[in-house]
Image (tube, rainbow, N blue to C red; front, side, top):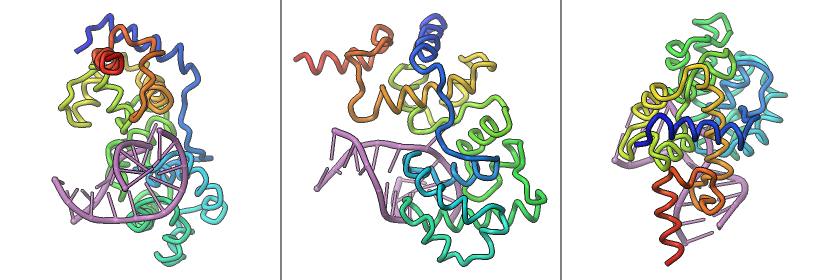
Length: 217
DNA sequence: CTCCCGATAT
DNA sequence: ATATCAGGAG
């Protein structure tokens, strides 16, 4: 695993590569963000944004999602994967907002995570992006980058990855670093063809060196 | 652990 | 054709 100095080096490089990294899910308020993040499971941000463009015109409030039938909502998000469970979760989530939170989105992770379709990752994103709470949401990119760069161990669960990152990264940098790691994973350290040959972190990346060696032979 | 699942890149 | 995508629930 990387030491303190090596991690500091990585964090600084992340900042240099992606100084303006931020949430790419288009939203106008916490409620739209919750819906967008629930929809984003196992699906690209680009597709979510395409769907929410029309969706957010039709559905403005939790009530709006409940006056339509489940089938209608399913049709409206059908081009997104896992649309049946997502539609069901969204209606249940909206009912909870009305019943328990006066139609507003709660700001604490503990409350967010109780909502249907909202797990640890989604709760962290909403708390961080909508309410400015320090958080590190471990999604597929953050997990992959953390493991390739040996910020954590290969066999760590997503929860263990999150705990390790919170321990090794200063709290004031959690949110920025989290978004920079997503950009780094999405646009550079990609799942399929990571751009190791042009990676400024190659010198501290065992995985990258391993990959470079393989290709050279 | 499996299932949910369409769009897109490779 | 297949892997992957800002995961979560049962």
